[in-house]
Length: 155
Length: 155
DNA sequence: TGGTATAACATGGGAAAACATGGGAATCAA
DNA sequence: TTGATTCCCATGTTTTCCCATGTTATACCA
Image 1 (cartoon, chains in turn red, brown, cyan, green):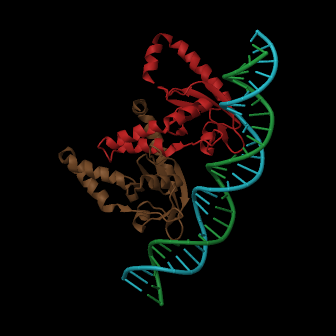
Image 2 (spheres, chains in turn brown, cyan, blue, orange):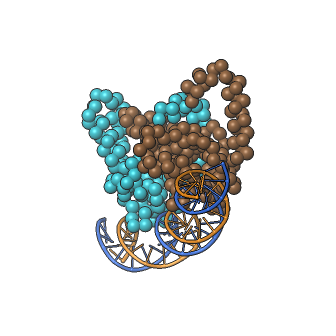
Image 3 (cartoon, chains in turn purple, red, green, cyan):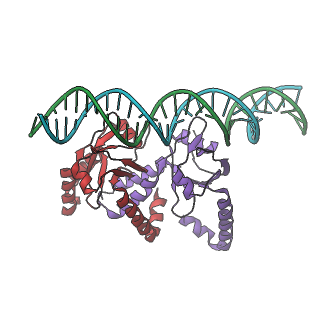
């Protein structure tokens, strides 16, 4: 049994006519070993799909549940947004998930998609969009190089 | 056997002439696997129906019982309202619940309803109302974005 | 090192199961 | 009896499951 579970690497896969995509093998291994499930939702900040293990969202739900604040308005908004958009995406015996119309549209994905590891989460991008985004990020990082340490701590 | 039980996603279903609605399949799976029951009540803050597992209300009751002086009188009143309004909603063999006149009226639901996941709870909205509400929430959340980041980083 | 066998993987397509939904019969209460 | 509620069956659609194929990566042996 391994100790760490990190979504890594960048993998390009095809999206077929039914909206199915192969989940990278490494990701599938994580799901199997943790006994959890993949959950996806529209990224709040970028035109991409974001995914993580259901465990992560469950932690969030437990925090809310235990906060002794059953009727908080702020919590209400947040939970609606997060859980209302998220959905389980189990993969079949060949390792594919079926992404919904809503997600594909948000990420402008048609016939192929790029999986990008982010540690505890991962993202799914339209290939061209990701190319631009990666370039943007690299430039941005170089620009703020001196305070790079700082920036990483934030996110 | 899964580890986590979260109401998620946004699902639009029809309400037939008898007042019956299909409970989303994922929700039914949760009910079956937990052996609990769906409980619904009128939301205190919004024109919608709120639902959860009976287990959750039991937990709320326990919290009230164990830390009486911890809660404000207001919280106490709110809890009374919920328990006074809540009722079990079992589903039939085809997976449908029959929502009461009272609930439907409160949520202004006539011929279709939207189920919105909230983690340990879920809501049922009139489709048009939900559309407006979601827009409102998105704007609201973006406004307080920094604290959202905070919340996500935690988990 | 080079070449081959083997396994893992991505992907296409079709069959089977699950699902939402309409309608009717049976049951129950006023 | 009337109206409402529960239960069951029927149908069309969507989703899931499973088999087949080609490709890539890995392991093995000479």
